[in-house]
Amino acid sequence: MRILSLISFFLLLSFALPAQNEEALEMAKAAITKMDDGDISEALELLEKAWKMDPGNQLYPYEIGYAHYLNEDYAAAVKVLKKLSKKQGAGKQVFSLLGNAYDNLDNQKKAVKAYKTGIKNYPESGIFYVELGILEGRRNNWNEAGKYWEQGIVTEPNYPSNYFHLANLFAQTDNRIWALLYGEIFMNLERNSRRTPLMSESLYVTWRESVKLEKDSATVDLYQSINWSMTDAMELKFPAPLIYSTAVTFGTTAVTGKTDLNSTTLHELRAQTLSYWEDKGYFSEYPNILLDYQKTVRDAGHFETYNYWLMSQGDPVGWEFWLDGHQEEFDAFVSWFNANPLEIPKEKVMVRSTF
Image (tube, rainbow, N blue to C red; front, side, top):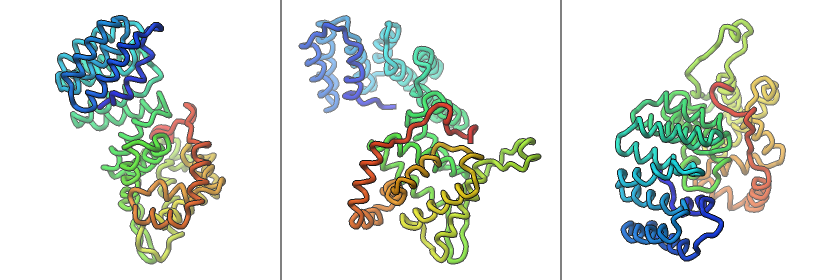
């Protein structure tokens, strides 16, 4: 995973000693600008000078390791980062980048060790499960990758990257329900990054692939894996994903006579699905933090705007047309949305094993 250097600079200022060498810090900032411009050699020279001026500050060796990583000199990156990882207070980014460097050297064993050392030092962090999943995914071990990413969600439910990778993974399967659920949670947790429009488009495409409208009927294809325990079978308690697929099927009654699933019909379908879920008492029978949040958005009067925003990059023409006539509603939604973000406590985490 590529780590943005300017971001890492400010995150890693916590490494600095109380009596920071201001000249060295300014030199490091200049070096980072050089890195962002692709001038790795000059960046390294400046960082080495800064480190000599302020040898106790762990910021500089990290940035040196990162510069080597950007330069694809992974052996040099490992040499610096390995020493840094043994320092007291080494940040989680150190272990993440060290593992990435080992992985690029095709040393999976040491990469895993670096990530798991990071987990040991930062047991509440989800970032290392992202990396472990990516490592398995590069080797086409997708089941293992998915398990790591879901463990990352359980570990740190409000960290978005594990949702991002899971949504992309399940979008390629017959169980697209998970692409929709994980993807929508990601959109809530990471609203304004370069990945957000990619996920918006993916959600729109996945909905259109999963729901086919005809004039008087609809086909919903969201969930294929049936995992039904003996207890559930005896009590006739259906798996929650199957129930949600049924709710979406009922939701299509809101668009009877329509043949195109677009931003408008998707909102109507999702609103009807949510109403069905509520009418059947499923909020208590099949708890799901995302559906709870959808209800909160709806009850606040913003569900239509929320749905258009969610799918905006998949249907940009529809989004712009809608926004042109609803700017005040959108502004009100943004104000409410910023004040009422989705927050996921550990006891309400949503992964396949809990829904």
